[in-house]
Image 1: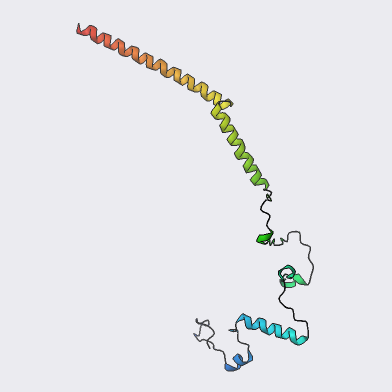
Image 2: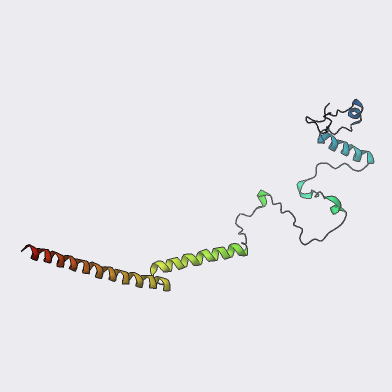
Length: 162
């Protein structure tokens, strides 16, 4: 039985499990389910009570390293919040963060400002409307002047023909 598809050593040799290793069960190719079953058998031999399937409510969390041996009060430790779908309260509103709240306030104030801008009630809108009125007046005067010049030119042409 080969231990792998690829050659790991520079010599190019592949390693194989010997029949003794297979019989002893020290082979690393063994599926994990066999290991778990072997661990259960060891506990049964010690005389400890065999636990049936634990319910989900009383499931003990698995600890990493020395976490289970030493009680640590770490304020930065974030405990996972596992909430089942049936326990979720749909009507509950979630609190928004400061940044989200500020962003919403900024959007609302911008919308209010734009609405006032359209109505012409802000200082900037008043200045814009005054500027527009001035430009319209200047354009009207320029158009009137062009018309007068055109009329004067036509009169000069008419007099030159006579």
